Image (cartoon, rainbow, N blue to C red):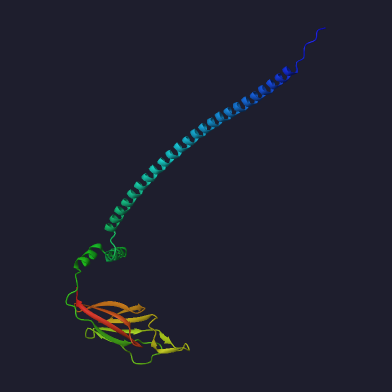
Length: 240
């Protein structure tokens, strides 16, 4: 049996070498982990940058498409507005406004009621501005009521050829009793006598009418006057 020499100094050196080797191994592992982590982080950042770049390019493309649509819609709206203005001008040229529109409606109404178109055309061509007109005059008469027992009142025009009388609704006092005078806010019935012919006009004052007598057209307007009275303002022009 042989015995090996035991050297404690060699034992300590081996242990120190082992500890140093283990330390370097741990440091190598740590460095390798750091490098791997750095590489993975760099790869993740690069991948994220690619994703963000792609998303940004997609958003820019969508923005450009929307801007193009807005431009096209704006151009379409301008074209539509221009077309609307043109159509409105065409409608106004076909369907005039103001007095002309009223005249067109009146002509249509006369034709719908059976008026002969040739006769209507003759009347329109025969129309001309009034000539030989006299200054307006004003007369008044008492409007009769159920409670008025006085004498009959009237207005005479055209040397007695036209006689105008009227009947109204009695006004009411604070006790709701009828008064002798008429209520101008209620319906008034006018009777217009012209050479044996009698016309009746009914409505709320003022009431306007015209009568042709002896080659002249008498135009008059009946309005409310002082209490109990209605005033008649009239003039006359050569007819036709």
